[in-house]
Length: 388
Image 1 (tube, rainbow, N blue to C red):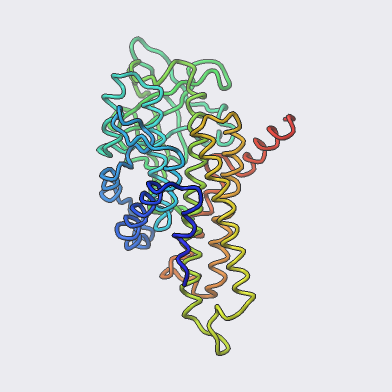
Image 2 (image 1 turned 30 degrees about the horizontal axis):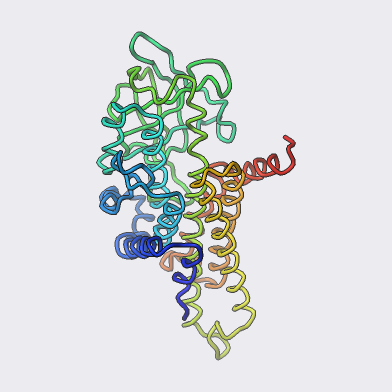
């Protein structure tokens, strides 16, 4: 059987990036894959294993070295998240979210904030959660209602955040709240920590996928947050929130490709062993053609994702359009390939023990988060037509 993983990772990558891919795949195979089904079944968040990734520099992947991070590029990050996701897209996706929080603290924080908040994030001593979405403010994030009222040297926060990954297990919460007028200009970013009076969490949501990471509401009832915990400037919160989305879309696209690649590899292994009508399944040309289409779709999306990651690293003015395209293509491709792999397994694909149905469940949400794929089409169409 051909080594499809190695073949998939050669185009456009340097020798260092190939070594990075191999290191991350080795970690995924040895530390994540053997436990992924158990974590999924038990809704277990493996904080101890996540903290091991700090030894590989994954607590601050694109935080500069002078701030304690790894100083890697967004293309490097795409390589990392794809490889981690071959074992468990749920855990890889949480690490992406944590890294977005760390990057925002480094990019917009003061020296004092970096010392207090960033260093524990980079070391994974503290886990981070990103709190933007609300029960009635999803795609229209600028409509958020969580309020922040200035009271002396504190802001008093009230509101509820929805679908927050890591909530209840994280120490650091980056919260977007309204300090002024309606719309994007009235939003400010705040750093909150576990244990603050009035900060609580909802029940762990029962989800179709991503079961190995907790998803809860973050509830704020008269939480007093020091003025020094404002990240960036007052009224800059929406800009900060949006600044993380291009990178987040690259990462979730990479996670989709990793999950899709794993599903394809599982299907190839199964079909080389399974027989029907006196022949291996790989002996049937129609099935080989389906595998060819799956591999082609992953490679096409991967090429676009790397193109967009390169545009991000180069400061290309088309980066928002390209990352939207890459997110759309990669998340659709990853899910569809996993779904096709399940079909090739037949009834066995529907069983938990083979891991295919978990990949299908985990990858489905990637078409929704970091901006739904419908929103990606809105972004792309606006850039293409100038209308909207």
